[in-house]
Figure (cartoon, rainbow, N blue to C red):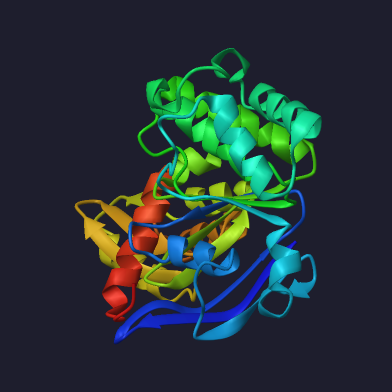
Length: 315
């Protein structure tokens, strides 16, 4: 549904995006995660036509955006990270206004706006002024607004920011329902576990570069294998064990803490088996051998930390 190829954007000497490549299949609920200033909003604004890129290509439903801008904007809905609501209008008036901008009026507009309010669970607030709605309700109303023209692809920039747990749950359920209806959704956040709860796949961006993409299942597996292998040995054999571990290509770093080795080790179970096998064959008395439990937060921080260490001047 969405393909981004070699996307670049600079502001003077400041590089906001550096060769971004991304593919999101139709029907995906894709989570775009990164720290503030990582490049999420810039990417989204380029995709919806609010910002031009320096170079690169964006394809939506197989068509390049810049060459078919009018047609493709009809396929795209965008909810920015600010509400942009008109406080003196009621919820139904607000939607009627945006429906009119797409040439939808009269009974058709009335039915459409009523259906959208029902979709985002705001039917009982149709005659309430926008100013009197909670933050979560305003966010849902903005989502309804983005759906007025029935787009195939939705971009939501930090929609859960500042919402309480109940409002986040309501938003998550609405987005899942929209995907079930055939919509493709791209949602950004700076909190990876928050996206993991609702998304089918995620991409991590830092300093304008895509660092990791994959299904939630794959990302969770990588999180599990992103932490050190802890090996406890006996008889003062720590140095020998460290030497054996360092000979294995999958080993990235070895630290000795008393009688335990903390081994930064790439790969999964097969690679762990190889490490344990070599230690045993070298007559190293292994007492315990396990992978430290990994979390999505730890993996995200590790990726961010590695990127910081690269010293690349991007954002």
